Image (cartoon, rainbow, N blue to C red; front, side):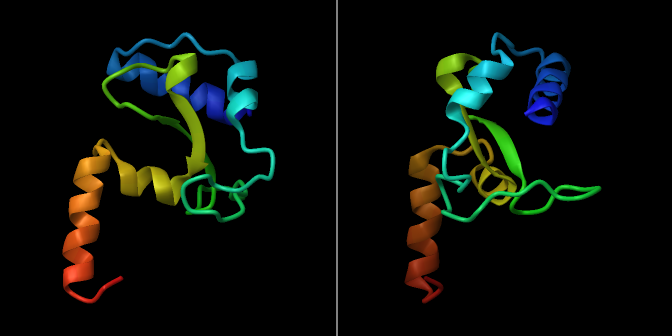
Length: 103
């Protein structure tokens, strides 16, 4: 939990976005089963480096800061794939992939 908190605080400071969360806020949104809510994989912190299954703190709406109502813990793979895109943008990518037989 400490790594998620400290990393998010550093990113918020560098980006100049609000950071009003506590460690308890992160614990509150950490999935009880330890699975990424987006991909369903078991999250586990990498040793010495992050992996696709490492837990990350996501700002659900990238236009907002690290606020209690705007955070989720998801895997690094899901967070990277989501990036700063909207659900609509991601659906367009899925549609494009399916149209090419990639689903």
